[in-house]
Length: 93
Image (tube, one colour):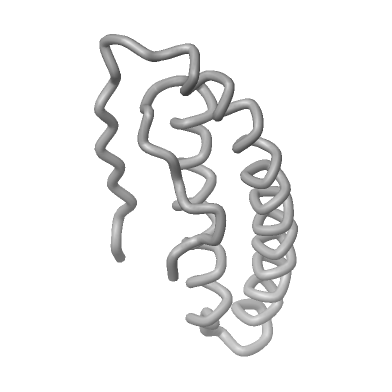
């Protein structure tokens, strides 16, 4: 099983310009996060029934869930000022 790793470099100083950019950049990030979380919840339910009846996990749905968790973690680090590194609006993977 792969683990999720996130390296965060906390900035010593932030500019006011970066704060204004964040306010605008958060809107699409939160929207994409909401969509990914919804898809992840659907995949969780499908995987539950897959394990219950077929006794195996669907790797496709598991990848969607992993992508959702990875994206949420990167977005939350940016959202809570832990890093100045902007996550991509469209998730990788």
